[in-house]
Image (cartoon, rainbow, N blue to C red; front, side, top):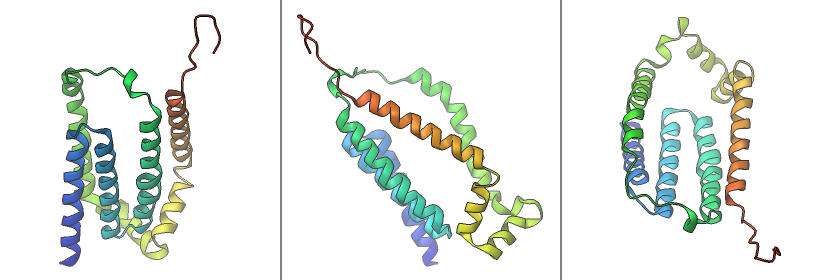
Length: 177
């Protein structure tokens, strides 16, 4: 019963913070709400018994990515960005079916879970080794190429953020910097 109450607490906090990410207009408040969402999701992982994933959520997302967002927030010259008064309604309508399909997929995975694995072999694998060994074994054997591609995408994103955030050199009429 206590585990269920903690789950409800973390999930409610995650939903409220996610609404704050979407609805608030100040970038500082959005980053704080995002940090709250990431910590709440890590709490959900801990409640579910996935300690490794929860720790990775805290280390990678709640710390590294949030600090990265703060660096981008301070480095980007916001006075040069264009402010539009209208929302992107067409893009929102076009992306809604894809978003709905992703939510249906997440609901199916949540409801069916490990029970649909052939012969329940994942459940036995987890019982014989443990959470960390299972994740490491699968990640660095079957999904090694995907793991490396994700690290490459993160590297490209970091380089792009540095390029966006760098200061432009002002040149004067006589050509001197």
